[in-house]
Structure formats: structure tokens, C-alpha cells
Length: 225
Image (cartoon, rainbow, N blue to C red; front, side):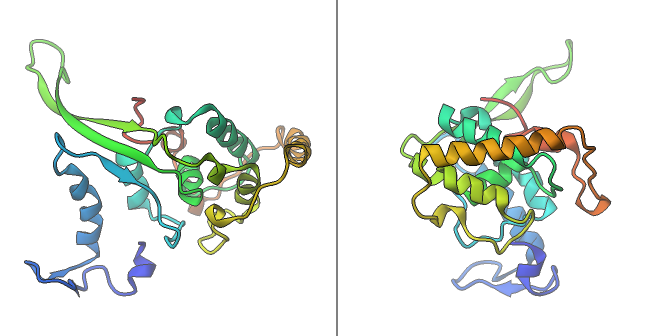
């Protein structure tokens, strides 16, 4: 939920629907909850995370930061999903972007992941400094995920969607995808267009700029597991 969806000033309180202490919360509390809730029961609990069909896919900056801590990495994708993600990245390389492409890909196609973390001892500073206690995040692919949700047609629909749109069609609800022959024909057309764009400079406006290093890495904290 971004501040527009909140529909009031960020420090204006709302009331919980169930008895709780304190009985109210504001938008800052809402943002903090996205971090604090995943720090519970680290040794006994794993989290299954998947985006809702009704969420606003134009994520605020604070949620993009959350993604670097708790989001997935494309390194856990099975080969067929990885191939479609690489195709998506190539076809959208010249589009202005306001958030990580992996975040857009996973949220629109509702790709889930499993998250857990543990406490480890780590040499943060060189000897003779003592060991530090650190959180180590781990992510895992959900083996029961239906790969048909990331079919060729849905990836093409995602590519053709207006960048940054929060109202475009939910790709996870699309009908059956095209045949392999139809997909290869469309892919060939896209690749021909890409060759013409390869020599063009990609210009990103100031209001949509995101640090390239931020785009390069996914969560948790950009480290493969």
C-alpha cells in the first residue's frame, strides 16, 4: 500500500478492527510492520510470500528497500522460469523504470518464495575484533508452484504493459498461452526490434531514476543462497 492508497496524511491514525494495544496505527507503523513481522520466530518458522492479485503494482521506495531484504533472487528460478525472466529483461531494457525488474516480474506474475532466517556468528571486522552476531536470510523456490502461471503469453503481456502502470491487467489471470510456434514468431519480432535499439542510448528521466546497483541485486540483501 502506498501513501495514495492510505488516503490520508501519514501520521493520521487508524483504528484496529480487533481489540489491541495500542488501538491505533499510522502509515509509519504500517511500513515498520513489513519489517518487524518477518523477524518473529526465526528458528521455528518459515514464511511463504506471494503478491496479492489486488495489490498496487507501483511500489513506493520504502517497499523497494524492503524487497532488498526479504525479496527473492532469480538464482532460485527453475530453468524455464529463468529463461522467461531473461527474455523479459532483454525486451524491457530500453523502457524507463522506477523499480527493480525482478520485483515487477514476480509481483505481476505472482511468483511466490519461501523465506527464513537465522542468527550466525560472522567476522564483520578484521582480527582482533570479536565475531559479530548477524542475521542470515535464506530463500527457497516453492516446488508446487504451477509454471503455467508464467507462460509465454503472460510474459508477452507483461512486456507490452505500460511501464509503471498500477491498473493494467493482472497477468496471473490470463487465459491459456499461445502455441510454441506463435511464441517463437513473436519472440523473433521482438529480437529484430531489439537489434535496432541496441545502439540507442537509454535515457532515464530524473523522476524515474533508480540506482543501477539497486536494480542489479534482488533480496535478501542481494546475496545468493
